[in-house]
Length: 256
Image (cartoon, rainbow, N blue to C red; front, side):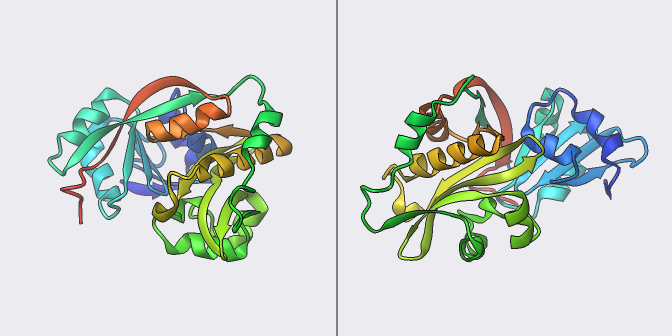
């Protein structure tokens, strides 16, 4: 496969694939595009941070693997059962994982969400927007990279995206941010530093972020990687739409 800027030719391969990251890619905001033929592609991979969306002819599974193999955190998002079989059949330690696609509420309960965005019970914690200082901190750690990592630099992030973070003594410890953006919405990225989990911080940051999205007139898309993320989303009115299969590298056999 080769890189291509011909998104107009590539995107029809992903028609019917529900994901806001693909909308962002179609608008030219997110993603590195790869395909077999830039003018008339029959298979394609869209690389967006740790996500690798695959569509078209699954006979190109080996080529898709080669694009992602240097990223041990890679998550393959296959467009068909054929891609699932082809990628897991490569013998490269790729296994299936379950993710959860959600539906947003018809109307967000802003009063309830605003109450959830309360950090006052933590005397020495602060709820802030991601600034240049916290942008730099986010890039330094694996757990927080995705808060800002799909943007070229802080200028790009500050002009096109935003995030709500919780800090402790000047240290970024939790945030909800834009994994990707498009003209009418964002993909939610939420995580907490391992040392600060199970305190309810993700709910606080998530509530602040959802409220900010509503204030800006943007639709926050919530694709849950696990049941904990799904549980947090449910507090803001999201409901489970469907479970689906993604792929990742086996922890015991991650690619070099």
